[in-house]
Length: 97
Image 1 (tube, rainbow, N blue to C red):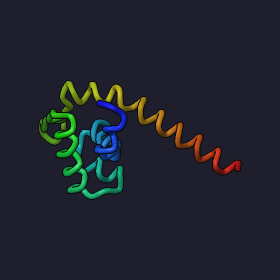
Image 2 (cartoon, rainbow, N blue to C red):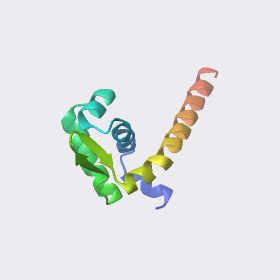
Image 3 (cartoon, one colour):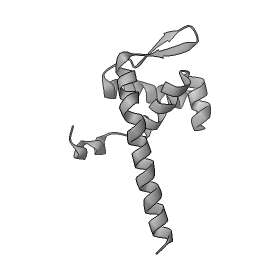
Image 4 (cartoon, one colour):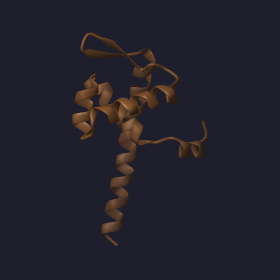
């Protein structure tokens, strides 16, 4: 994928993915993000399409991540941290002008 192709992706989905991987529960992820459960379920459906993988399998009341979900999570955490750092630096630089 080229960086320009990112225009076609809702990057907010990645924040939802991170909440899902940490909570392993749609309802708790929704609460954590201050979203409704249907919104997170819809985001999960779009994530499944984006990654062409089920990402989570329901086992009892928990959602167990697939191998692909674990791979994504390992890379995504540092990437989101980097984005937060860049945005924070930009906000700090704007205030000092």
